[in-house]
Length: 173
Image (cartoon, rainbow, N blue to C red):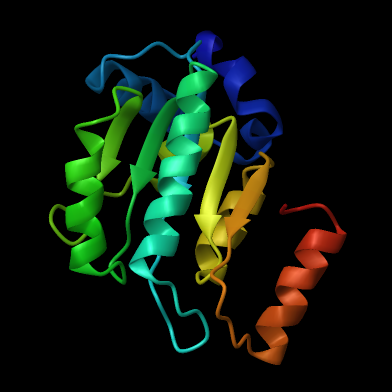
């Protein structure tokens, strides 16, 4: 448990010893050390308000993965139930090209509950802006949260206020 304490920063106030042990077990499962730096990428999917193109999502993912690789940072990546199969297929093919992807969950192919482990282990979290719940969970981790926004958005007023307040309060970047 002690070797993970420095990784979880302030988030440990909200975690139980069980959560921390579970994260340590997860690291052992994927054969990595807790002193490794991790970034999480959380991919949602297009909505009426957020019209992600495949190119936008893939370009964003590649950029994060390549930047992480240049800094010797491992990637923890998950899609969601709303992620289109075409994007999951592309991510699956792309994953073979990058040795810094430590763990990949293609949710529609093999759903796994990894959010808690990802948030505990990550030094930064990249999340598509279509999912208020993924953004909120990421903010709760007290780690840097960077949202990925498509070019075409028609945000509902309440969601626009949520995003603007998160940016203003420096909860997300």
